[in-house]
Length: 375
Image (cartoon, rainbow, N blue to C red):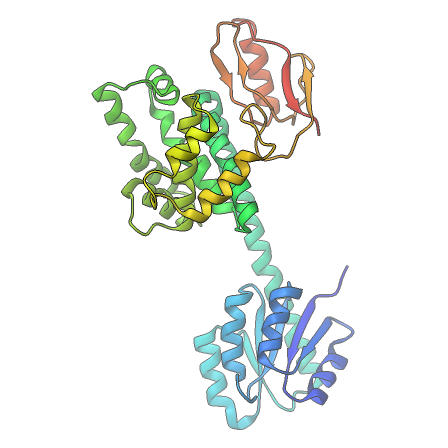
C-alpha cells in the first residue's frame, strides 16, 4: 500500500533533508523550514500520519508548533526533536502538548525509524477507532430514522426536508453540514411518542388542543434524553437545546435550523415564495441575514418541494411496487389511495422496509406508480 505521509520541520535545510533521506524507505516525507509553512502544509496537503518538529527554531519553537498542529490535525501523531539542553522543555511539551515522544539530537537513524514506525502504528489505531465510532454512529442513526419513517412518516418527511435544505445552505455557504444534518433528523425523534392523530394535526399545521400542545412541548426534552445515550453527539445536542431555549446567541447550526423549520411550516401552509421570503424577513434581524440570503438564492433556483430536495434536477424513475428495488431512494411520498401517508420521500428502501411495504399492500391499496431517484 501507499507509504504513510510524514511532515518534517526544522529551520535548517540540511537537517530536514537528512531526516527525509533516513525515512524514505518507510514513509513519504514532506519538509518545511518554518512553523507557519508547516501548519499551512498540514491544512492543505494532509492527512499526515506523523509530524516531527525541531525544538529550537526562530519565531515559533517546536512546542508551540506542535500545540498548533494538534488543533489543525488532531489525529496526526506528534514527535519532538531536541538537544540535551532542552530536555526539560521537551518533557513539558510531551506532558502538556500531548506529544507522542521526544527524540534527542543527534538521533541515530535506527532510533528515528523505529520511533516513526511506532508513531504510524499509533496513528492507525487512532483512525481505526474513529472509523469504528463512525460506523457505530451511522448504524444507530439508521435504526432510529427507520423507526421514525415507519411509525411517524410525516415526522420523517419533515425531518428529511429540513435536512436536505440544511445540506443545500451549508453547500452554498461552504459550511460543514454533518452536525446540522444529524440535528435535523434527530429533531423529530421524540415524535415517536405522539399518538397518530396528534402527529397528523401537528405536521399538517392544524390547531392543537391543550393536551396535544403539552405533548409537543415535551418533545425536545425527550429527544435530548434519547441522544444522551449516543457518544460524540455533544455538538448536535447543543444545537437542539439551543432551539428549545431560543438562545440569544445560538450556535450557527441552530440559527440555520430555525430558518429552515419556519420555511418548511410556511411551505406546508401552501404560501407562495414571495410571501415566504417576506415572512422570514419580518421583523428585520429576526434571522441570520447570511442564512436568509443563501436560502433565498436556493428558493429562486431549480429546487422544488415536489422533488427530492438536495440534488440539482435529479433524474426520477417510475416503478411499480413489485419493481421497487432494494437500496432505491424514494423521490416522492408513498400514499394510500385514500390519501394516507405511508412512507415519506427521501427514505432508502432497505430489504426489511420493502418487505413491510409488500405486507402492507395486502391490506391497504397503495397509489402507483412509485417515484424513485434514478441512480
